[in-house]
Image (cartoon, rainbow, N blue to C red; front, side, top):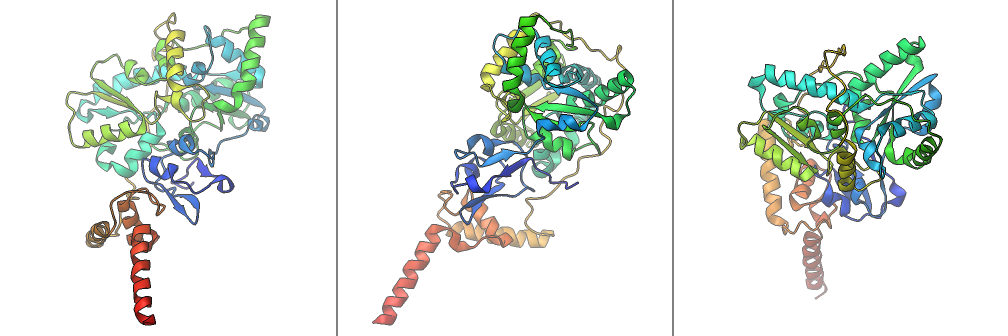
Amino acid sequence: MDKFFTAVRLQEDLCKGCINCIKRCPTEAIRVRKGKAVITKEFCIDCGECIRICPHHAKLAVYDPISILDNYEYTVALPAPALYGQFNNLEDVNIVLTALKKFGFDDVYEVSGAAELVSEISRRYIEEHQEDLPLISTACPSVVRLIRVRFPNLIEHLLPIKAPVDLAASMAREKAMKDTGLPGDKIGVIFISPCPAKVSAVKDPLGYEKSDVDGVLAIKDIYPRLLSLMKEVEEKKEIENLAISGKIGISWGGTGGEAGGLLTDNYLAADGIENVIKVLEDLEDQKFSSLEFIELNACNGGCVGGVLTVENPFVAKVKLIRLRKYMPVACNHLAQEKVTDWEWTEGVTYEPVFKLGLDMKESIAMLAKVEELCGKFPGLDCGSCGAPTCKALAEDVVRGVAGEQDCIHILRQYIHKLSGEISKFDN
């Protein structure tokens, strides 16, 4: 599998060549070349900001179609906690879970149930690894990828624990095999995702070799049909008792939910990719002290803000708060569950994708050239060249994928100079 698999793609026929996406991308992964956007997948972290900002809907997320359910004899739905925040006046998650079975799934297994186990595993891990503090959450794949390519000094602080979705997938498959007697490859474990980063985490996981998730559906794709099925379930009073999580698990759907499950005050929780980058920069500069845990979510509001959801993230977060009001604190505990394979089996390695040269000498020379070019460019960061900033264009020139005259100000100076020389020749 390509280590730079990305789930965010361009639909070229819809792209108008505007510069909205290049200005919004936090890792400067997008350029406009020949009137169309181009995504450099080595730089992309699947945050989905380009999908969110594109006025022409030319950016899209790649995920599985609903027809993937037909590929398996038995299917299990893994609903993300963020799913519950999409519905108005929801008082019982069992309504959603029962509707998922009517949708076509044979069984459901809440990711929020596994999240409670991850919270307890994390508490124990932090207690036993005080030398690695502060530990950074690894639940958001975009944040892990960002650290991997841009903040190598922070890799050692990543919490080496599988995300709740992967733990839920392995436990759901084990349960299904026991219940049905079917072999594992006949069972499809399908995650209902709020964001494209989860797709990449399934296709190309970091920290372990293979995900137990067989497919990923988008919340926005199943929402319309699920809504009607929920009404049917309520009207016919066919609600099954399928829920396996409490407040801690449901809270993972919004910012601060994971950190809250650790039962500590020495934490920091931030959301929104710009805020995440600022926190990581400050952490790299050692501006934080006495912190045990740092929870970072690329999307505003947390997972409820993913681009594959339908509800406003801040409204969805309030809905989760209301929903969990009368829930027990937690329904899953390590003493009651036998949990294995929760820890990463592979280390996350630094990928110097932004590095200019092959060695120190070449890098210094190329950086000097970048500085020289930045002195020539106007410093307006207008984006007319197809790059987000003048510095980004200078780096592209040094890499050999752009020219100085891509800058319209440099081109204008060149044309004026050329026309002056032609005038002298005519005289």
